[in-house]
Image (cartoon, rainbow, N blue to C red; front, top):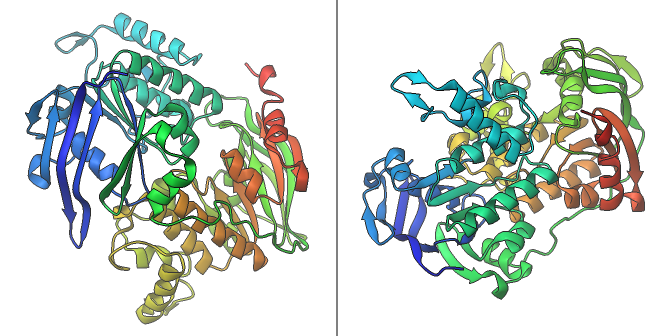
Length: 510
């Protein structure tokens, strides 16, 4: 590995009202190096990278940025890009109604003046799609791709600009195992070409597999930087959380009772391919106090199945839903909530909370009918209930009045889960509960899941994290291409069994 320093960030301090997000942070990255950046949600990782990528201007922070020995006045994102810096955010920014090709080359379409060279555009896109092993036309709308495919497209959009420094923020959170392998191969290729990669991830196995060094941030300060061969898993976690973490998966098996939910003959049409179903005539049940894991590859139909039961997806959906033995009609989320079902969705920023609302308002959004009288909100009661949940979930924020959108991903997830805890649902769907959050926040989420199960709540948990699925589930149902291909419980729940069932029908699908 080359020891030529390509990037230095010196004595960076960034303050928000009431919060010091970064406190005198310095970091240096070598040419052709993969530097993992780890820390709890709210540690300052994303803020540091936003400064590097020009999202915050030099007037908005203290400190210096040096590229190849030259001090840069980081005026904006364009300045960063001019200096060879590209950032791929965890939250995707795609124009879903435009083609894959247009999304890939947005801002630098080939051609002269305002005339686009469509032949070159499509040819270049085909080369990228071939590299991604993605068999789809460049002319297809980006909206037809799943979240993992969109993530890979966003990464390639940055790569084709030939950056000198690339920042990847939780790039594997939406990817299948095959897509992860393609990405890691691409990262190896970039490393050989001398590109410096800043790799933000909460998946520690990825850190040890891919990184040359790892930087640990905690509470806005740089704690340490290790060569990867000089640190182990336990030391890394301790550095991030500031203490030893007793249990990564604090699973406590609850007493499993009677059936609380049964779904029969669930069929969900594909939103993108006419005449096909993304979920095909599946049935499953859930019991009181049970954590039922939904496993399978990304795109297997897990999220769509829950969305259809909850009433988010309705067009041409077929289903029979029974709550505690009684058949119910659920045509929308309001009816689902009335039937005692809650849903912590995967995309919390899109469907989990209202960005312009405070933590307090978001926590009580599902119980407005209980804390209102004659259309007037009982503010004192709202404040008391939300304060209790704020403390129970250990949300890190200046106050209840802070906007949820200003919180880290882990704290946002705590608020989303908290709103359903306040609603006292009997059945809770949780889709990718720990996506993009740190190990300490994960442990807190797992503890809450166990407490809910102990209180008799039936939980269906969709997870692409195999360890999470194995450790937290009482029973696991595996979906592959919209079909149930396996069901396991107790000692049968192993990574090997889950993986075999998840790929069972993959070969028969075009």
